[in-house]
Length: 344
Image 1 (cartoon, rainbow, N blue to C red):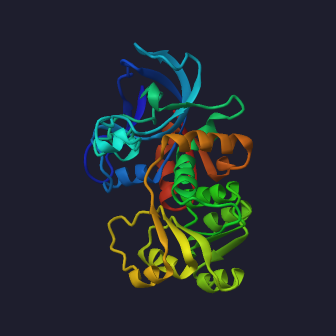
Image 2: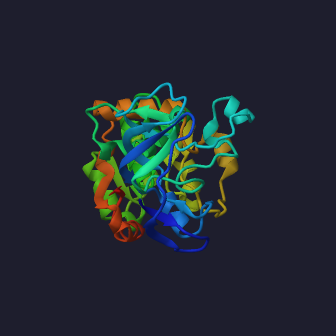
């Protein structure tokens, strides 16, 4: 089968090549991949700045149909339409796994970097990590359930957004836009989407199209002054950083109210952040760090998307065959695309 493979360590070294078709083992199913999304982590693997074990087939955002059951499968049937959590090969015995936090098990090896992923025709997954999708949901939409489950976990489950909250999202990339949509779906009273000058155009235009209450360009707009004006000098109930930019992270403290919350989603790529610790302490801020997804966030995300409350599919800007992967990666790296769906 044709697969998009990171063949060795170093920048680049990605090619479309023939790979053996996988076979399901005990408790596993074979899935025919119908759609695969490109995540920022796939770009990081390409550029050698994310952990990976080559040669490895890229991709962990997928939707597909079960076409074969391995021995001892109990919960799924042939023909079922599914998505799946990328928590494969968690150990199952450490304190994190045993407290239901398999997503941050230190032994985890996810599809796309630790083991073979979904940018190919067939994918093997443990049935314990699968979630059914409704017949009303198309495969393209289902392929963005994984990043949506991230924002549902981060914004609803971790940060505990409350209906009526005033929310500021910093960084209008795919995750930032999905975080804003998640906040709206959870009943946020007002959502501000703030970006940097390079975001003007595709990203901020998409934010306007999605109907966020206030869309700001930090190169032209004073974000802190605007937030204070809109909140009558109080500040935001919840600030969500999806930018990973050190200056923006430090600036969240000026946007949030006393006893407010900061939801940290964006990663800095190893850059140090000079954070105004004492100012945050005097505001008595709660900071919630977030990574990956919980079991419960998946069904919540599926239900919110299927109901129409969270139109995650609207962040998709490109749909391409797998053979056009080079164009897809180039468009993403040039910020000419938001979310790209590849068809194996």
